[in-house]
Amino acid sequence: EPEVTQTPSHQVTQMGQEVILRCVPISNHLYFYWYRQILGQKVEFLVSFYNNEISEKSEIFDDQFSVERPDGSNFTLKIRSTKLEDSAMYFCASSEVRASTDTQYFGPGTRLTVL
Amino acid sequence: QKEVEQNSGPLSVPEGAIASLNCTYSDRGSQSFFWYRQYSGKSPELIMFIYSNGDKEDGRFTAQLNKASQYVSLLIRDSQPSDSATYLCAPRGTGRRALTFGSGTRLQVQP
Image 1 (cartoon, one colour):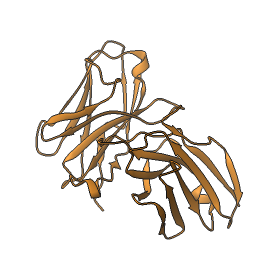
Image 2 (spheres, one colour):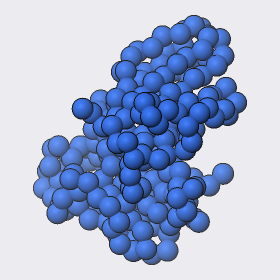
Image 3 (cartoon, chains in turn brown, green):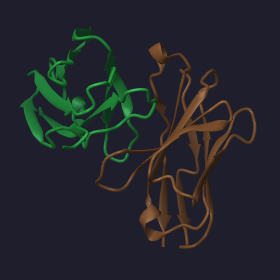
């Protein structure tokens, strides 16, 4: 069964460093998403991406965040200058284009720890 | 008012019983409703989705939607210890693709 994959599973970084989280969406999906979950809190939407551009973003997704589809299979989230409060699980998700089948399937997540 | 409200639990039921999980939402224009299960330290896993008022059944799971009351529920029949997890309600808002998750209800199924 096709699944979303994410690398790395755990990333430790120093405050102020840049990190790139990587995702490989399900192959026939064209909508991609990033969510995050701070420990003990709810899952929060960050951004959605379609047709090589951001289609929707939340207040959390400020100028320190960016997304990119560098090739035909990968989807990345970059955090330019990490803060302690960026420590969280980051989930990538993907879905088909049609609204009637836009169920989002989540990857296993990347645990980001900012020291 | 929170966008999505769920009782945090824990909801404790004996094995074999019916577990009833409830969710209310504030966006009256929401059209799609998703239930995800999340085990501790893992990612959300889709259980069911529902678009229309009424009931939708899939195996041991039944989702119920009442748009007039802005209420969606999930029933789990013949609950198993492996069903012990946090259940997340996630409406998709008007004209949006983003899911707005509730804080989830923690279910404990006692053997």
